[in-house]
Each structure stands twice: as C-alpha cells, then as structure tokens.
View (cartoon, rainbow, N blue to C red):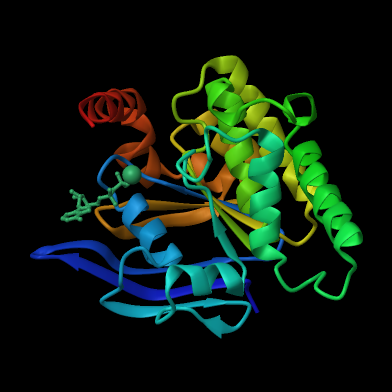
Length: 263
Ligand code: ADP
Ligand code: MG
C-alpha cells in the first residue's frame, strides 16, 4: 500500500477544471516531485492535499486513512505536514522559541506525566534536535525575523518537521533563493531522507536541477491533468514532457518571475 494515494481528484473553478481527475501515489520514504508549467494546477493540488481547498471529487488517503473530508489541522494530526513559506514563523521570537512552540503544539500529550522540569528538558531536547536537522544550531538565539531568507526557509522546514509527519509537503522550497542558498537547501532536503527514515516528501519545485537531483519519481501536470509519471531519467527523456514543459523552461521561469513580481 502506498503512503499517499490520490485517486481521481477533481477541483473546478467555474468552467475551469484546475485539477482534472488526478491520480498519484507517493511511497513511504520517497521524494516525489510535482512539476509542470505555470497554471498547470500544482498549487491547487497542494491545497487539495493540505485541505486548504475542498475537492469536488476523488479520494485522498494517507497510510490508509481517508483525508478528503478532514480539516487541515486534522490532516496534520493524521501525518501530513506542509511548509508554509515562512508565514508560520514568529519573526519577533528566537529560533529556539519558534521551535519550542512548534514542539509544544505537537507534543501536548506526550510528556504530560513528566515532572515540570523533565517536561521542559524533553521539549528543549526535541527543539534542539530540530535545529540540528536543518543546521540552525548557531542561530539558536537569533531573532527569527532577522535571519537571512535561506535560514528562514530552513526554520520553516524545521517547524513542519516538529509534527513528525509521515508526508512533508514542500511547496517551492527554493523560491527566491540564490545559487548558494539553493544548493544548501537541496542538500538539506536530501539529508532529511536519512534523518527521517520512512518520511515521504512531495516536492513542488521549478528548479529542474534540484528536482532531478532529489526526486525518486516525478509527476508532470499540464492543464490540470497528469501528462507523465516516472523516474527522473524517464521524465527527462520523455518526448511529451520535453515538448510541453522542458523545452519552454526559460519562458516558464520568466512568467513565474513576472507573476511573483506582480503579487
Ligand atoms: P500552478 O501552481 O501549477 O501554477 P495553479 O494551481 O495556481 O497552477 O492554477 C491552476 C489554474 O487554476 C490556473 O488556470 C489558475 O488561474 C486557476 N486558479 C487557481 N486558483 C484559482 C481560484 N481560487 N479561482 C479561480 N481560478 C483559480
Ligand atoms: Mg503555483
């Protein structure tokens, strides 16, 4: 059984079918990338998975549990964590306090029989462990809002990991990063695989170098439909994919930049 199973998912905006009977499977421990040109329906699919948008049809199961009628926080409890692109960070708090709050929120019941001192020590240890996993140890006492962009994205990943998810949704984790920060974040995502054995990642990313470096399998969306699914090598050499997507990568990149500038 796959960890995440999406079957015939549908989302309509008026006459537009933004998600057109999409089916895909994410296996335990897999990094699965979702790619496709601008407007293909990637963000819509992420919102359907996280529960931010209600679906018009289809099913979505995580480890066998149907999620389609659950609210976003219930999906988090079921094992689905999403990075919210920095918006979940408290900018006036330190890295340590951000992590402690996240750990506290997700372990409310884990240590309730502990003495207060042991309870605090256990939470501190979990928070410090998260800081290590995203290499933010040296920023432990830094005010989160003053961190460089790349470090804030790392903190955002750590906050999502605090829920100890079965599946981590990464929506454009490299957006707005320079080459050095991108390389660092790409390496970090790769390392999550060894640090969280069994956790799967659904990665939406425009940086094709990162996608081909990280992804075990790739799903290509075009006009809301799945155009192709396969390993990185299969997708790279798929003529249909080259025709509709990879051939116009530069153009797509430019459009995205314009869109981001306008937003
Ligand atoms: P991607 O993330 O792949 O660029 P989106 O999921 O953002 O694509 O958009 C897919 C299509 O759905 C686009 O045509 C977009 O204009 C449309 N769309 C997305 N969100 C809405 C919405 N809230 N209302 C109406 N149309 C939407
Ligand atoms: Mg998008």
